[in-house]
Image (cartoon, rainbow, N blue to C red; front, top):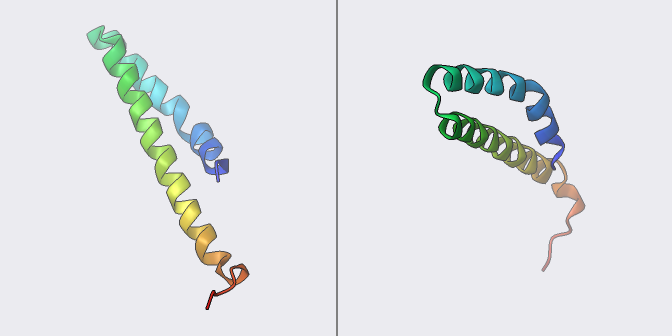
Length: 68
């Protein structure tokens, strides 16, 4: 379910990059500020994918036959 990552991208990337750009201009630590922004986005993406995976598992459980 990578559809959740596009939602996270649209909602969060501009905000995260603005904060990273501000931190970079204040400290001149480009790798640290943008690296942290990348890790934050990665974490948000994994959280969204995990939530949707659990939701999909719960909502589609009736399609998996029980094995005896």
